[in-house]
Amino acid sequence: MNFRVHVRVIPRPGLLDPQGQAVEHALGSLGFAGVRSVRVGKAIEFAIDARSADEARAAARAMCDRLLANPVTEDYAIEVDA
Amino acid sequence: MTTRIGVVRFPGSNCEDETIAAVERAGASGVLLDYRATSLDSVDAVLLPGGFSYGDYLRSGAIARFAPVMDAVRAHAEAGGVVIGICNGFQIACEAGLLPGALLRNAQQRFTSRPVDVRIERTDTACTSGFTVGDLIRIPVAHGEGRYVADADTLDRLEGDGLVVMRYVQEVGADAPHNPNGSARDIAGICNEAGNVVGFMPHPERLADAVLGSDAGHRVFTSLVDRLGAAVPA
Image 1 (tube, chains in turn red, blue):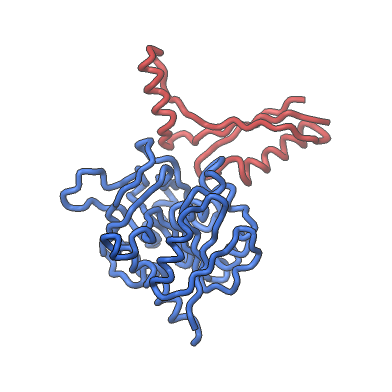
Image 2 (cartoon, helix red, strand yellow; image 1 turned 135 degrees about the horizontal axis):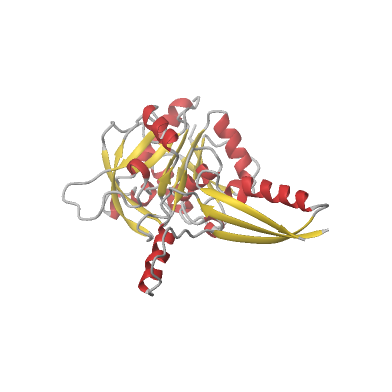
């Protein structure tokens, strides 16, 4: 079966995120009041052949642990669509 | 026997030529190593140079760490061999797990290219053996992602075990912030527990010849060559 995998990689809370700060400042300048704690991460999508959604998810987790996310600085979340 | 120092060229490296020039100026033979190589061609030490390996895609150093040559670099490090990462090479060494922590986007959100003053904190690593603790050198940084981060326990261990090799310091009369990137505890460079793997953000190879107005970085390379020469059987 073919699955579509969505990986979201986000800088870990507590780490300074200069991109998030810059975007937050820009949003404030545009008049979007009350916006706080902006963090900028990455979205990575791919298609994968796997026997089940669980197998696709396990593969994506291994990819995150080895390459897609840095365990020192980033958290990740995985979504799998059939 | 001339000391042989390998400098790895990854796709996107851009400091390998001046790194080889600095090594040769210090009296060693510089050996350019291709990222696809599976052996290190019997070099005595490996330098991972600056640049933007693999376009810095995903994260600086994240893809370079899986280049074929890195298996040999890792084996060399595990056998106690000297590995030095400069700038992008430091980022690669951290991504590869040869050094703890990570290097993130500069706190001030800008690529920073300027001289910094760096204090030598440890003098028993191969590339700082010619210094005295507390020596200051003014050499350039040029990076967008040089903010060293690690968890508090790791930072405490680095300090407690004396693994900080270089630190940004405030020079007298400076008007620019002394820390060019927001690095934790002003860390410019670190080494591993064994001291044979060292990484730092500043570029000594860019200021290693007096014709450029200063050769403040030259001693990093003479340290390395002298140390390796002492270890290599004649």
